[in-house]
Structure formats: structure tokens, C-alpha cells
Image 1: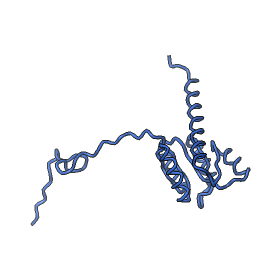
Image 2 (image 1 turned 180 degrees about the vertical axis):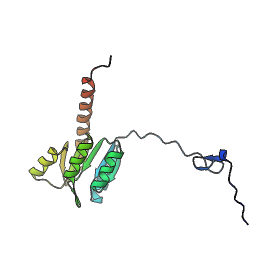
Image 3 (image 1 turned 90 degrees about the vertical axis):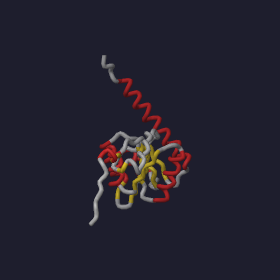
Image 4 (image 1 turned 90 degrees about the horizontal axis):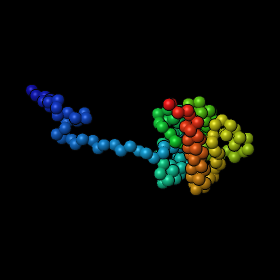
Length: 165
């Protein structure tokens, strides 16, 4: 016959036994701007991720529209980059859905370079449109410019609010 020994309640800490496991380390608040990269091509997604991370961004990745929408609702994003072609999904439809949920800046990074594609991309809510192949320095410069414009617009909106006094 086996005897089961249950430790006293005061020894349980964070779901573990306090005398055998140290406290979990405190999490530091991540203050980097969060960017969602929506791209179905893993190679392009990796290039964008590495470029943005090396520039100080926290990068969240999505390969499908459904995953991207979940990320938009679950995270406080500073920016979204998205492709028009996401396998079976439409990046244009995704941009429309994102715009209904959020005012987060969006930059289309896509292989569609016809004038009508660029115009439609901007009309559905993108703040900028970059065609593939792209140079990573240009992508970073355009992302920074979009973020600056968005920040200035937010500051202007705050200044326009009446004082509560």
C-alpha cells in the first residue's frame, strides 16, 4: 500500500512547491512598438521579421487572415504590414476588416504593382504601399514615416480635446 503525502498549503507558491522551485522571474514590460507582419511566404515573413526586430520592433507574425484578425484583437499593435495575396485569403478584405476594428497604421507589402492595385490598397485603408521586390531600408524608412504621421495625428487629436476644467 502506498501513502500519498500532500504538502501543506503554505508551501504552494505559483502552482509549484515553494521549497523545490524558485519564484518565477518578474516579467519586464516590453516597451518596443509591436508590429504584426501578415505574410504567407515564410521567407518574406522572415526577412521582414529580422529587419523590424533589428530596428527595435517587437514582431508578431501571421500567415492567414484569420490568425491576423485574432492578433489585431489580442494585441496593442503599433503597425500592421500585410500582403494582398495570403494563399486562399484576400489581403484587401483583411485590410477592410482590420480598418473596421482599429485605426492601427497599415502598410501593404505586396507583389501586386499595377496602379489599380495600389489605389485600391490605399482606398481600403492602407497608409502606404510597397511593392516586391523591396529593399529593407526603404521598408524601414516608410514604416517610420507612417508611424511619425500617425503619432502626429494622435497628438493633434489630443490637443483638440477641450480641457475638463
